[in-house]
Structures are given as C-alpha cells and as structure tokens.
Image 1 (cartoon, rainbow, N blue to C red):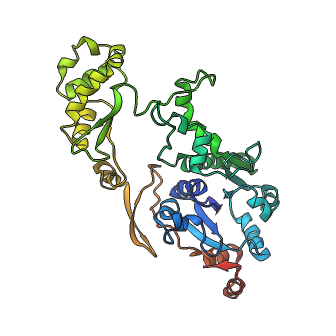
Image 2: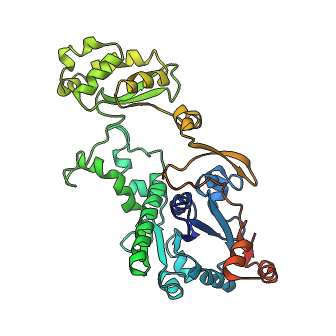
Image 3: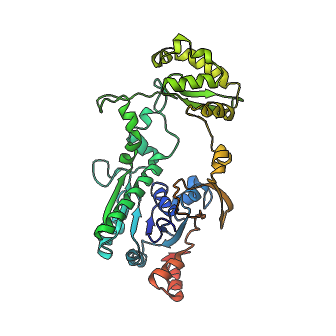
Length: 397
C-alpha cells in the first residue's frame, strides 16, 4: 500500500518550489490535485517560452491530477472553497499578495475546514522587511549565502547549478506538511505551515557557515573545487568538458589507499606527503602526481579503481550520463513513462524508497485533464452542471 494512501492535497502551486513539494508527496502515494488557471496553466508548462507540457513541467508534476478553475470568477472561487473540506492539505506558492487578492487565505479556508493543513512556500516568508519581494530559486540562493561560498577565492561569487532554492524548499515543505499531518492525528486540529525559501536554503549552508564564519563573525571563504590535492577535481581522458573525477580523502588511511590504487606506493613513504599537513603544504606537487595518472584513464575507469579501493570518489556525471549510468540503471531509477501529448518520455525516478510502499511513476497530467473527474466525484456535479461551468469559462479541460 502506498505510504500516503488516503491523504488528499489541493495543490495550487506553480513553477518549482511548490511543485517539488507536491511531487514528493505524490511519489509517496498522496492524491494530489493540481489547481491551474485557464489558458496556459502553470507557467512551468511552457518553461522559457518553449512548448506546452515542457520537459521541465514533466519532471516536477508526475503522479498528479490537473483541475482548471478560473479563480477570478466568483463561481470558480466558490468551487475551490467547496472542494476544501474534501482535502487534508492546501498548498500555494504564488507571489506576494496574490492569495490575499483572491481572498483565499488561511482564515477563510479554516472556516470551511478546521482540520485543514494550509501550507505556503514564499521567497522570504509573509512578514519581515523582505516579505513583499519576489523570489525565485537563484535569488533565494543568493539571499541564503550559497553564492558567496561558490567559486574561486579570487573571482566573483558563482551561481550553483542545482535548483536547491526551489526544490530544497519544496522538500522541506513536504516534511513540514507531514509533521503537521501527524500532529493532526493526535489533536484533530489543522494548522498553518510556512516555508521561507531564504531560510530553507540556510539548511544547506550550515557546514559552510561552520567552516570559517566563527559563529557569524567572519566571512566563510570560497574554496573553488576543493581543498588541496586530496579533495579536488582531476581531469581524465579524453579531456571533454565533464571528463573529471572528484576525489575526497579525509584521513591518512584513505590517502594510503589512494596512493596504492594509482600504483604509487612510493608516495606513501614520501616525507612531503606523510601527514595531512604535509599533503596540504605540498598540494601542488601531489596534485601533479595524481593528475598524471587520471589523465591516462577515463573517468569511469578512474572511479572504479579509486572508489573500489575504499576512497570516496566519483566520476563527474553529466545530465546525459545520468540516464545511462549503470548503477542508476541497475537500481531501476531511470523510468520510461507515457505522456498523452509527448508519448514515451524518460524521467529520473523517486529517490524516496520505502520497502512496504510502492507507487508507480505516472506521467504529468495534461492541462485540466481531470477537471470533470474531480468536480464530479468531490462535489457530485452532474454532466449538465459541468457543461454549464465550461460554457461560462469557469472550468477548463
């Protein structure tokens, strides 16, 4: 049985921070009904001005149903409020003030459903000096300090590649929602859940804060690719843009295993490299010795040799490698799913593995695909009722 079987979520999210939250919950078996506006729906459907039902949208909206409501019409807003008592959770991540203009705040919905868990994902939260500022992923990363510790020390800050500001906030929202749901099992009461993307990003900053900030009195430095020769990137054959491995040696035992793995036991006895301090002091010389070895091997060969010797190491997999990686393939992590407009598409799977909960991956919904199904089942609206609402532009799909 799916772990979250029976939990129902009214999902008024867009782009990524909110959709990442509801996808995680849908992956675990929750019934997620995505509420979208008529026309183009979630703007992520046409990401970067591209085609409808973009690859971006498909990656963040699997296992959901789509309901199209025009909330600018009184009838559409009323339908949403009538749906609320049928759901355990409502979540939104619209920009500052949007929900307030629609008069769909927590107090309004709590009147309809006192046990409702009402979740909000906002760039800077709903109070404080920045509360009215708009925010997206990289803005949150900048505001949380992530850019300040990314890049080389003598160069400007750099933008981290992964969208942790969005997806990282979404996963934390999912955790908070589940905590609120567990509490409701004991008390019967719902509550308001709020996630600030700026605050959520600081969760991923704690090691860097502790590595040079002296409890917030100094600035943690940028350290480029790593620290010395034993925590760094090494180029591999044939020299493409991602033909690298990353090696992370954290003690002398690992260093000795690394030296043996590359056939250089002589380096173990080299006085320059006998201690951690020595390896750091003589980092350039040590880096050159290791780099000679990696340059003659592919990143997969180098990884197999070094990681196989018990040293933390990985090839730098690019986005194409992820879909052909033998380990991810063996774990059935790369999935092929059918999508009604795109046909068979390949997606990366659900990283949340529960031994007693299996939820098959389903393709993202078409815009409004489940409008009539949801309203008919939840509100007992007849075919004639639904046809009339569609004619008036209140619903779509």
